Image 1 (cartoon, rainbow, N blue to C red):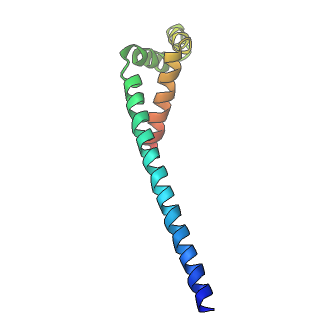
Image 2 (image 1 turned 135 degrees about the vertical axis):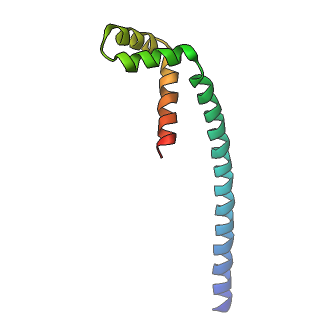
Image 3 (image 1 turned 120 degrees about the vertical axis):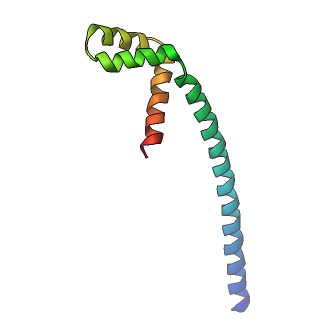
Length: 95
């Protein structure tokens, strides 16, 4: 009985230690990915032309100027990337 409990305890501890090592490795990869994502989002958000278009789009809304800015932003992949980066930034700062 004593050896059975010792065996179960050692299996439990080794499994716990193995799971702990796996989790820390995953969290390090996630940290690296988050850093890369942050740098790429900051690079995208530093585009002054897209920033100007986004301001016009939000400031003028449904007017002709706002719709033209919206068309220019939606018409390019860079505009979509800027919008996704902006949403990600707002999501990260929200809370």
